[in-house]
Image (tube, rainbow, N blue to C red; front, side, top):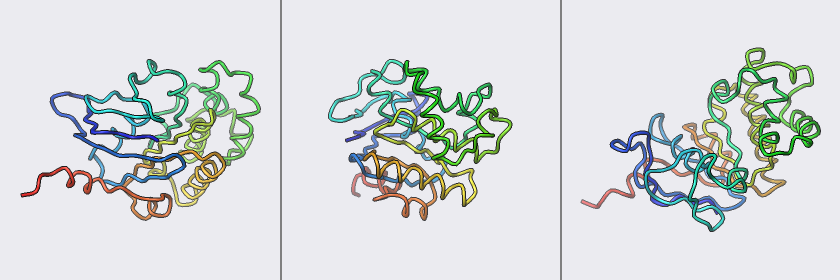
Length: 224
């Protein structure tokens, strides 16, 4: 299970973005976190994926409390997550060709020899043709780059996926294609999913259940 317990987090301890937030995702479950822009959803996503240390609260991963974040987290915990962000151009190294972008996690974890076969497999899965693989981010569209970023998120075969507004900048056909890739991956591996967004219709179709940000906040307020 992936469980956030009473998480308070932000980028200035004097003004946290998220206060006392709790959420749980079961293995194999798809949970949508629905809320307006600026409410703190992305901060929750970053905490859940071990990318941002909370000011207080506890993150439980597979029954064990997480004690370190980012590069200080044990490799087994770091590699349990695949993350796709809203803006692919901010999450992709502009110097890398798409083939190297997708292979980046394999090389970072000492599994370089797996890269050729795994990259080719995932490129086909996400709909990237061979002629695109030698291009750099500025030479492809947003949709093509987000396909590569999704492939990068899947390359280590993670047990948990965190998609933070993954489709917000995409057209309807690309959105449908990438959601289908995530769903097929979940079906074949049993991975859990936390999908963050503000599109109620998409999250309702995509997820087993949807948590409304306002409902979580209201539940914490004392009765008058």
